Image (cartoon, rainbow over all chains, first blue to last red; front, side):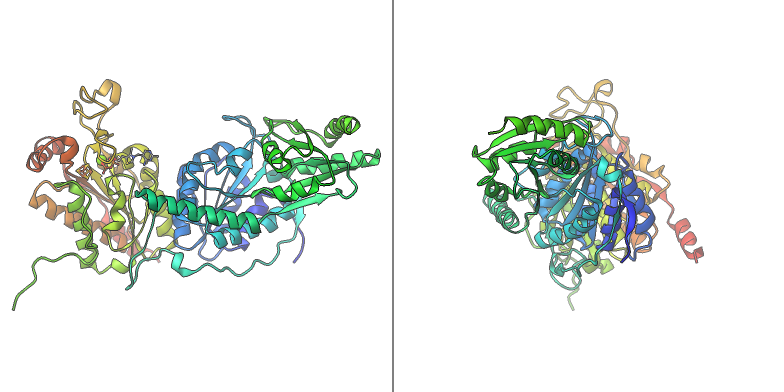
Length: 352
Length: 257
Ligand SMILES: Cc1ncc(C[n+]2csc(CCOP(=O)(O)OP(=O)(O)O)c2C)c(N)n1
Ligand code: SF4
Ligand SMILES: [Mg+2]
């Protein structure tokens, strides 16, 4: 397979189609329009492919839910305000155990905010986002190659656990171009018994989230919780970069982690031993991995394009056993590696 | 030899309805089930019940069903039908579901000409949540949220869904019926059958709006409820065929290569 140069938004769409996604619904919003447009162009060439430009993000998420129920691999994408609108549907998919991929190419917020890259939707993504006691698997790639690989993997995860999976990236990742190689997707394994395709001559089925009896509902909640426990045990992804000899570790994901890598190179050139801990799954958060690292490294800087959201997960992971500093640029501001390096250098000098 | 003239429809489970005595939902469920039986489509039918009094419709219909969040049935039904074009897909919706929270999903599914059928229960109130004002509530009709009667200045006007939807290019067949009398019930069943046939023939969006009793929230007896539909509700919402492009759509379909 040859390398191709593609923008992040297009990579996600192409990886989706290659992974067997045959239903996409979406509503235009910057900075993710290229994804919707790519699906419009290419889904019609994929056998059995359906593309619908929906009347809203609310319609889109319910469309993918309906399609998913029939046993088709599905995706929708949007950016921050549109993801807020999808939350009822995401909650409903979690409740009804419907697999599906939701892509959030984050922009500046709150409210309409702006169309610049930001990471302000971490809480919304990792805490479920919608109502009720559920979680969403959240994957945060940092390169176009990861967008390709992890989008494909996301479909397998969604099927395996019958749950919605979110790809969380930002406008920078959506728009930037990098060379990628698309891997061969695994053959799909999704049992027919979960598909709603008409009863034929057999017993009819129904899919629902409504459980009026609190005891039934409680059991369903615990069942989901047990599933989330298994996911937490088995599906954590993270990267450690130059931590072996590090005195200070930056914790960052997605675009922020790319900036951090640039900063680390500069800092290392000046003799400062700085590394990076990059969560790739944001939920489940690589809590134990980070805690393990704190056995030998005591200084951390959480860097986010927000006012500090993942910061809370880092605090929970480190449980007061290490020093935690924070640097944030919310609202669509993107710092340069040089700016971050300066911030880190000051903290590095002060550390014990 | 004895001839069976009345039996429990096969497409209706034997569960006892949770609906109030005299509720129109019970009648319409039975009609839909009878039509499914008569057309022999139980095995290929997929239904989408709403949030509303009919939220538990899957306890009654013996066909595959998936619950939709409030108002989103037509979005789900559109997607299901697009993925399984040879199945018969219907969305079952109340007036709050269709004409308030889900007006966008409903109107756009209709406008796209999705080849689905919408069974639309107009009972002029929000039944499930206890009789609040619906978009279809009549002017001066009292509800729990229009205690002094619906006022056009504050609450707007009754939304005439069949009239509006019949203006959309994507719709093929739209009829408004009523289950307030035996004749109305028969007509309703015919309309439901025609709507499903329209879908099976691949002719596009069909909807049957049904003026339906809610004796509980109207605070009337069932008999008075029927009378109220005939004397009052059906004056605002006249029964009749609002759109029938079936013949035309058939011709176009036959002319297509
Ligand atoms: C998002 C959301 N908002 C509100 C509700 C509460 N709710 C459930 S059914 C309903 C109204 C149903 O009225 P209608 O659609 O007319 O159906 P009916 O019960 O009269 O048949 C409402 C407001 C809900 N389930 N979801
Ligand atoms: S409240 Fe009205 S619509 Fe609901 S079940 Fe009772 S009679 Fe029927
Ligand atoms: Mg109603």
